[in-house]
Length: 321
Image 1 (tube, rainbow, N blue to C red):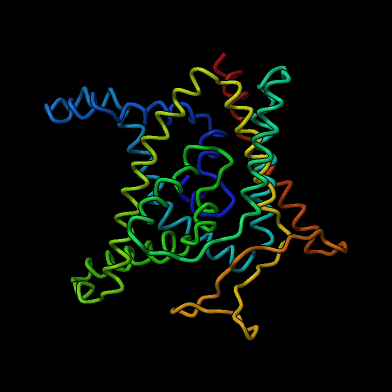
Image 2: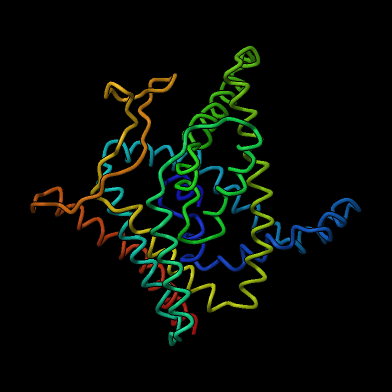
């Protein structure tokens, strides 16, 4: 989930959905409330752990943190060197996820088809929004945390892609995370000179505020989703399937980056000489080449990879039975 949350177009909530623990994740987050706080303040740690399903949540958070500094680094490299193959794999995984989720949905009523259509339209509309400019105002960063965490709670809605739309993807998921990694590395080596680095301190402040916003959004969204899942489970699943289907355009493998340009036509660079991506030009491959065939192969592998989870569950049920 940690690695998926960092990749634009891929939803950590989708990973939870396909892996089969999405509802447990949402209902566990719901337990972070006044009752949990009361148990914690009274020192009833065992009751607090049982009430909040803290073992499950802490292992999940630990896994996401580890992947942020390990698996996501590998993904950054793969996206740089093998971009077409990586996007093809993600595209296949989302197709596999749609197949996986819809197989147990049951009969589709007209109302649920309407919810599905709404989800698809919303997913497509979001994918074609133009990104805003980077903004490190701490109030805006806090709001980015609330909105960006949607990728963990809403399958098919990529929090990373939402941050691109808001203009703060690089600031929040690249620069600030790298600043934390570099700072921790220096502290381990006994170097505390980062305190005199104003840019580093600012990035750490941004990360703290973003994290606070994310926690706020995670808890509040989970309460809303928990209520909706209990009252309108089929309708919610129909919208989720629509979101996932609509997000296919975001991870379409064949695309070219569109960069910001200044008045004389040169590509704009920020203070750290990075190219600013403002969107993608998507296209169909015009010829059958080895690259195209390999991309199709990786799409197939992505589909098989997701469906193999279902095959594994079926196998375990049969062997246990």
